[in-house]
Each structure stands twice: as C-alpha cells, then as structure tokens.
Length: 150
Image (cartoon, rainbow, N blue to C red):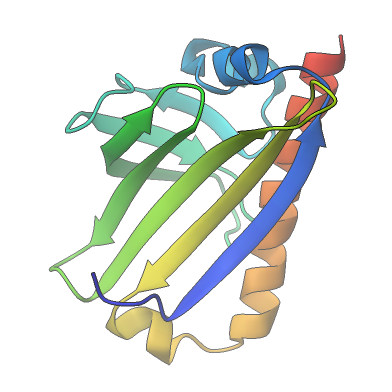
C-alpha cells in the first residue's frame, strides 16, 4: 500500500470496557441519536460490504453523502472502510476506528483517516482543512464518550 499523503488523527478515552464501547460504536442504526459527525450510516459492517453515510465536516457547507467499502472488521478491536473519488490514485481514503482495552477497564479509541492520491497532494490550505476535519472527528469522539457515560 502506498503511504498516505497525510493522516488526520484523534483519540479519546471511553468510560466503558471494550465490548460495550464496540457495541455502541458499531451500532450504525443508532448513530442519528447521538453522532454529530456521521449522521447516518447504511450498510452491513462486514468486509467487502458497501456502506453509504452522511457526514458533517466544516470543510463543506452542507452534509456530504459518500459511499465506501468496508475493508476490515476485527470485533472488539478495529474496523475501517476505504473510499475513493474517481479512479484509483486520484483521492483514496482509509477511515479507521481502533479500540484498545485499558488496565482500568476503560477503552482508548483511536479514530483517524489516511488520505492518498493526487488530490490530497494538491489540496490548498491543507492545515486549515485538516483542523476542521479533526474537529469533526473530535465531536464524534466526545459524543460517543457521553453516550457511553449514560
């Protein structure tokens, strides 16, 4: 795999164990109830399946509808999907949710996205754009933390 042009990273400590954290994070049907970043996801969380989702990101004036392919699912550990705009190598992404059990019974969530291809190289104002997307990731992370704390 070609190294990413850049990666947007975020992480947060979740107040519950890994099984409960995984259960809420992967229950896409409930996203509209709590998730300010991924407003909805349709599709099955299984390798090779297509998911469609609507996301809110400060880089766009309105919610954005996208499609991706689930590439990996390791229960209670990690899942990610890959997206592509146009032909391979133009704008490819890998959006990852990785969980790590902590000794105190909590869970660390690593939430990040890798960007590859020609368009990421050419992206103007990358610093501003990545900061807005990171803010969106962090809003989801905090909302998940709050949801698990209920």
